[in-house]
Amino acid sequence: MGSRSGQRHQGRNIQDIKLENRTLVFERIRASGGISRAELARQTGLTPSSVTNIVKELSGLGLITEGGFLESSGGRPPALLKINAQWGFIVGVYLARSWISARLTDLNLGTAVSRRTEASSLADPVEITVPALLSLIQELISDADVPRDKIIGIGICAPGPLDPHEGVFTTVPNFPGWNDVPLRRIIEEKTGVMAILDNDATASALAEKWFGVAKEMNTFVYVLADTGLGGGIVIDGELYHGQHDIGGEIGHTTIDLHGPRCGCGNVGCLELYGSPHAIVGQVREVIRAGRESLIQTWIGEDLDRLTFETIVQAAQQGDDVALAAIHGMSEALAIGVINLMHSLDPEAILIGGRAGLAGDLLFDTIDAVIRERCLSKESREIPILPSQLGAEAPITGALCLVLREVFRDPQVWLTSHTAGR
Image (tube, rainbow, N blue to C red):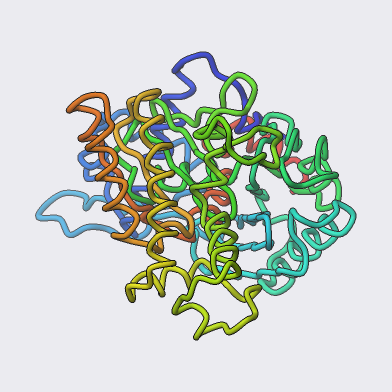
C-alpha cells in the first residue's frame, strides 16, 4: 500500500523536500481555483523548471488537470491548472474520547458528506466502537453515492499515545482495552481501502500547516486542548513523532509534583489543570461545595448538564466561579506553552480545541504569564495564536493524512492503488 505517512526519517532528505514542494504546489492550485504555471512559480518561490516537473508528475497521476486559459496579448495563452476533484475521494475520521465524527470529500476537499455519533467513542470497548466506526464509514460512502474503488484512503486521528508507523494504539490513558489494538489493519481488512492512523493533535498540526495559519511556518507546535491535552509538533516542515512516538504528549508532562494522579499513572499532569474537560469537573465540585454561580440559573441542580461552553458564557458575563476556572486553566496552559518555548524554540505556538472558545480570557492570561516567566526577550515574542481551523482541525487533518501519503511517493502509491482498479 505504498510508504506509510508515519515512516521514520533521519533529518530532511530529498524525499522530504519533494513532499513539501508537491504539497505546496497542490495547495496553491486548490486555493486558487485555477492558476498558471508562471503564477504558481511566483507564489511558491519554486523555479519554473521545478514547477513544471511537479505539475507533470501530478498531472500524470490525474490529480491535476488543465482547464481554461488566461487572456493573452500575443502568442499561446497560458493554461490554468486545476485540481481534478472527482478523480478520487477521501474519508477522514476523528475518533475522539466522547464521539466519532467522519467526513467524505472529493480531492479538492469539497462536496463534503459528514456524520457524527456520540453513541460510541474511544471511551467504549473496542468490540462496540470498531463496528460503529465501520458502519459510519459505510454510511458515508452510501450517502455520497461514491463507488468504493474511488475511495483513495481513510485517514483516522485519535488521542495518543499510538504508533502511526504500525497503525496501532499503544498505552492509551483512560481507555482500558485499547492498548495494542491494530486499528489500521482492521479498517483496511474490512474496507479494502488504505488506512492511516495518527495522533489527533499531530493531524491538526498538519491541517494548519496545509490549510491554516501555519502555511508559511516551518517549525511550530499545535496544542489541542479539549477533552484531553496534546501537542502536534512540526520541525523543518515535517511532522515530528519522536523516537518512541510520544513526541507532543505535553498533556502528560508534570506541572505539580504533588498533584492528583492522572489516568496515565503520573501525578500532577498538565491535562488535569489545562484542559476544558478538567475545568468542567472542577466547576462541578466548586458548585457542589456551595459556591453560588450564574451557571446554576441555567442548568439548575443537574450538574451533569454542565459544559465548557456554559462556563465560558458565564465567565463572559462576569461570573466569579467561571472566571476563576478559566483563569486557572489559562495559567496552566501558559506553563505548558512556556515549557514548549524553552524546549523547542518554535516560530509560533497554536492553540486549538474547545479551550479556544475562551478567546481573550484565555490568550490575555497566557500572554501575561509568558511576559512574567519566559527566559528571554526573544522567547517572550514567540506568537501564541488561535487555531485558524478551530474545531475543524482534527477532521481536516485526518483528510490531510491521506493526501500526504499520496504526495510522499506518488508513483509507488499509484502503482499499489490502481492495481485493483
